[in-house]
Image 1 (tube, helix red, strand yellow):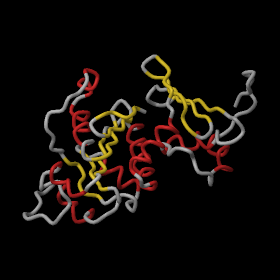
Image 2 (cartoon, rainbow, N blue to C red; image 1 turned 90 degrees about the horizontal axis):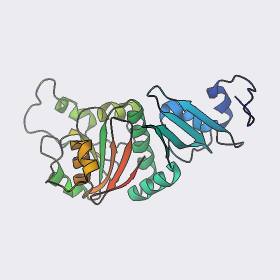
Image 3 (cartoon, rainbow, N blue to C red; image 1 turned 60 degrees about the vertical axis):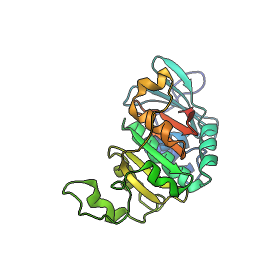
Length: 242
């Protein structure tokens, strides 16, 4: 811990320092690894800087990340406003919080992912193949396939699943698809989509971006890139990058 003059005051454990604020609500969900750092800045005007294992500088203030330094430049995170837009799009505070938290944890682990929240669950068959839908299968699941887990996750709500379980199935190649009430409809799913128009920057990001743009015609999409970035897509466009 240092003062504003740059003088060292004392050595502290950030978890212990943040403990008095454990029951305070954070303005934005946090990755598990940095929850204590966010809480340490909730009161008193404190600022916290972290060098992550991925070589990224993160700056926290007022209980949220405000800046990051990667790719040799500073980025304004604007986390509070971006999360507000995401929460308003889903119109489900608990679901928005759960998906955002899981996405942040995937991003910290440099694991890609895609979360699709459908506006109308009846459109699921336009986006998903029959084998990916979580409904009783007409044929036995192949040994070692994800279909063998369907009976465990059928009729489950994302907000009722434990977060570690949701993070585990989100790591399976493919997409998580759910409705606005949080009902899980598919995981590890390969999305159907027709060719979409993308910008040169988006082309460089690969098939996950194309899938996100196409799926966003059906609802709200949260994409996690393997470089640690989050992106929110709606109506065929990227609303924000985080």
